[in-house]
Image (cartoon, rainbow, N blue to C red):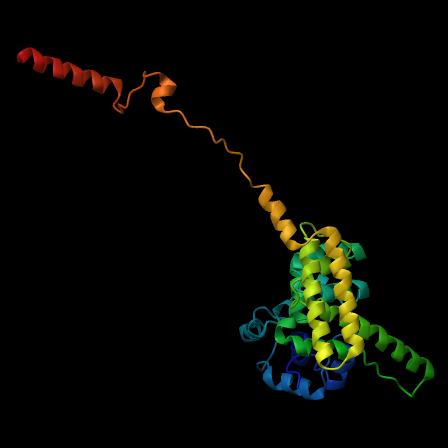
Length: 314
């Protein structure tokens, strides 16, 4: 059972709203905004766990019981939206911006990167507005990776009324497209060490400081292991595909160089030039005109004068 929805805090807002939305109204509203509704049972659990005080005046800042409840349930920004919260709400109605935001959040990108990339789809956002969007509508901290992938798969299920042929064709096409997108997202999830590189490439940025040889070496190792695993399990076709991948990556490494070659080049840049000739001594450098005294000249003069007086007394 999936324990939470990424939009649980938004569901809490709808369940506690003074307009007293019914379960069907909440369900239709969440689905209309392309958010994740997990069923009436999950909605019922939210209603039981989030009970506002009586009376409840969430819009009245002077009603302290209501404001304490909003603060405790982390709903304050939806009942009293500032400029950043308004941007987060507007993002729900911007399909391309919403898709890009959720893809980048899925892959572990920081809000500041997401807000910068949204300019490419003509949407102005701030890092805080992205944080609010993540909190209320796409809070991946509430679920684990398996649950998140299952929820993404559920988005491909489209309800068809009256078995309309056009709607059936649309549903099948959408499911195929969603399956491909979900597989790409899963590969680029935050669990992957290369997720940030893939996120930058997908939005049109070329990452710097990336060593192709290290990535190719890791890919070759994974391909060899995949070929071995499938061979042991009697799966000839996948084993062959993995073996071909390893061969291609091996040829790539021959052209770009392997990791050890990169290390050797790095070490060569650190080699110091040395001179093997004998280092001259202080006496040779100064021709005997040097002293080891560390005292100031005034102190040495006083000592010499005192020594001379001692000699005169004797």
